[in-house]
Amino acid sequence: MQSPGMGLARAATRGLVAAVYPAQCANCGEAVDGDGGLCAPCWRDTQFVSGHVCDQCGAPLPGESDGHADRCDECMAIARPWDRGRTALIYKGNGRRMVLALKHADRPDIAVPAAGWMARAAAPILSEDMVIVPVPAHWTRMFRRRYNQAAEIARALGRVTGLTVDTRALMRITGGETQEGKTLDQRFAHVEGAIRPHPKRGARLAGRSVLIVDDVMTSGATLAAATEAAREAGAVRVCIVTLARVVRDA
Image (cartoon, rainbow, N blue to C red; front, top):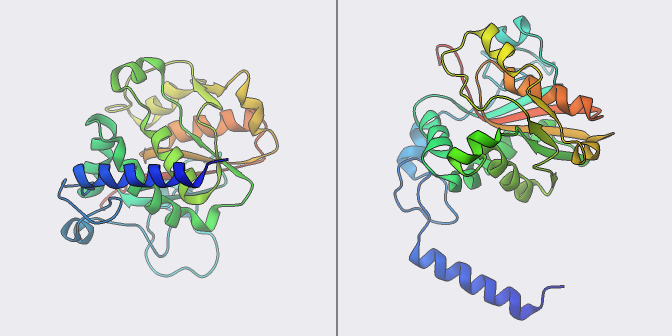
């Protein structure tokens, strides 16, 4: 058990760190109050997703909801193996810049405010028995980037929601290259069989509801592969949440 003295010492350390390294806007880098997030101008210019959305990917839909689960055109055309899904941002402008910074510019700190936005977006699909599992990264990509941005988000989301997090339940066994430039069919072919349950830790998903986490959804191919791996491990319900969603004509 942590002693009161240890707690005070850690709080003092956090205060000293905050004084030396003040929180920065996740988009532009300007100093902000609190634990980070967006400055007022960036918040105003960021496309958050709210209101009537696709129940399988979270993309915004026109009009108002009638209480029934609706799907976007893409999710009606492409079979989704997961049950429900949500996203926090449109992958455009500030949303795109934050995803790219998190992924390529050594900004894992963006995962902290991102987790708060994703928790709000995913609230309708969360359940108390869920375990949060990030889309796994191949070891070659981990070698280049030093961290898996999906795992960073998953850990932060676990702290926000209080849900269990298992960053090693799934593993990527093939392919460390990007999906950029590939056609829809090529994207799905590229990840077919690429994600599997971990030989030891995968069993922890048996009989559980699982929330698959990733930074961005384009075609949904990688999320589909992760979902199929979670079901192979015995998950009884699988939902997905992403920081951003690529939306046509957004």
